[in-house]
Amino acid sequence: MSEKANIDGNLADVNLSVTDASYRDLPPSQSNPPMEQMMRHLQRSNQIAWRARQFGHHPFGAILVAPDHETILLEQGNVDTVNHAESVLIRSAYTNFSPEYLWDCTLYTTVEPCAMCAATLYWANIGRLVYGIAEEQLLQLTGNHAQNPTLNLPCREVFKHGQKSIQVWGPIAEVEDAIIELHRDFWNSL
Picture (tube, rainbow, N blue to C red):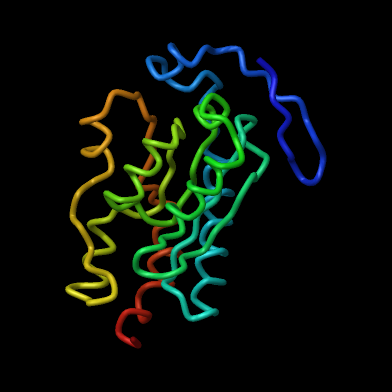
């Protein structure tokens, strides 16, 4: 099966050779993203979080990267308490790409996805996730904040109860300070 994907304004052939019945049983087929690319994509996600904060939104950012580990397909900042950067991005990805293609894509996000976003990633069939800081670290920063009632439920725990082998990397120590800096004074200013 072949699909056309719009990448940087150009149509590119995307070869989808795995059948719908079998792709869920296998880990994503491409090689794992190299650490240097993970770092670069997490830094880009944090720039998007910074932009979201500038517009008065919670400082979270996410990007979706193609199976080549290089091409950024979508990026999204946080919208509000219900429309998290990850879930908005994932819903858009699901309407624009096939589940087979998404299985070999990677979602990068500044903070570990909450239960809602992890479940959205699962149902949309995105096979890889890389996050900067853990949900538990966010809880330490936000406390019992009414605008971010953080669930202390790790995404790996959510995925463990599913039927797909979602690959997860995070937290990534090298980007923690930069991500935490965006959150440090934000929650006290609301």
